[in-house]
Image (tube, rainbow, N blue to C red):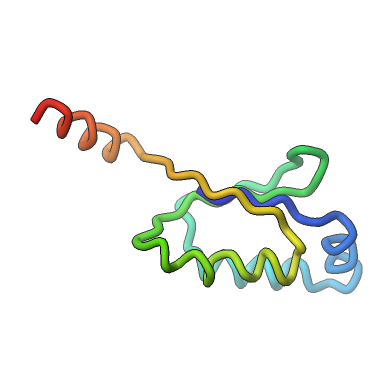
Amino acid sequence: MLRARLDTQVSNELLADGTMAQVMQSLLEQFKPEAAYFHPYDGGRTCTLVFDMQDTSQLPALTETFFQKFGAEIEICPVMNVEDMQKGLAALRG
C-alpha cells in the first residue's frame, strides 16, 4: 500500500493549471491499483493506493512521479488481502 501526502502548494498549482487530473490518471494507469482512495490526511491532500508490488526494484518507478510532480511525502506499507493472510497462517502450521 502506498500513501502519498501531496504538497499543498504544488498540488494547488497543478489544480490551477489543470494538469492534476492528467498526472493522477497516468499514475493510476501505471500502478493499476486494486483500490485507490483520495482523502485528507495529516492536514493535506492524500491518495492511498493498494497495489501488487512484485519486487522492491519497482519502487523508483512507482514513487518518482509523486516526488517530482507533487512534492509528496510517501509511505509504503506491506499489506495482505484475506487470501494472503490465510496462506501465511497456514504456513505457520507447517
